[in-house]
Structure formats: structure tokens, C-alpha cells
Image (cartoon, rainbow, N blue to C red; front, top):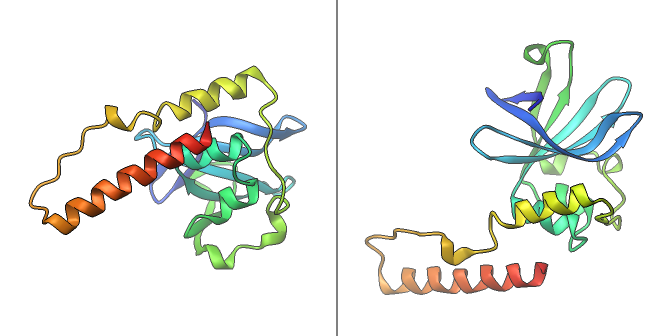
Length: 168
């Protein structure tokens, strides 16, 4: 995989390009070696400036399937990194900022939704969906919970399952 950014000492690798212009990735995802996912937007092609946000597989699948807008997939984050790239990744200028500081004019239009038009993107979407679609395959060990906490966990599991069904 192609190393694309380094944020807070963690290397991000190019995962999937959703939109490109003149063979340059404009809207794409990155992933870390530990599996954390990020959505990235090129905001200045000439100066190679980017906005990067952490995103869950659920968020990316929802965006790819048109359930949420591209704008919402970015703005849902609590913070973002503004990256001005250099010749070498170690020389990139990386600033972490509150999402409230984001220049919304640099984001996709508020109502722009994504459409899965290639088999490659459909396969990518299906691969991501498998990361969260089978909650029963996940095993959680919860200890020392009182009855109220157990009820909260059970309620949240039902909510998550309902949200997954909405994606399909």
C-alpha cells in the first residue's frame, strides 16, 4: 500500500480512491496498520493541501451507499487534520483542529451523495460492510456491570442492529 500521510506519528496508507482528477486522488480513504480509517479530501490540487477526518467503516459504507451525504461523512467528526504536503511525508505540515474550524466551502456540497458506479467500489463497500454487519460474530466481555449498565448495553446493541439493517 502507498504511504500517504503521517498523523501524530501514525502512518496512513491509501486505501481507496472515490474521486480523482487528472490521476490525483481528490476524495479517498486511508487506513492505518491497525485498521483505523480516515476520509480525505484534497482542497488544493496545486499546493497539495488536504482535510483528513477519522471515519468508521459504518460511516464510509453509509456514505458510499448514499445514506448520508459526502458532506455529512466529513462533518460528523469531532476534529480534523489540515495537511499541507511536502516532498517528504516527514516534512508535511499537519494541524489538528476542531471540526468547528473547518472551512465548509472546501467540502462537498451539502446535498451531494455518492453513487456506487463501478464494480470495484461495490466490492470495496461490501468488504467494509462485513466489518460491522454481523454483530453476533463479535464477542464482548463485560464485567462488574450493574443492572442499569447491562440494560444500557442491551439497548445499544439493538440500536446498532437496527442501524445496520437500515443500510441494506
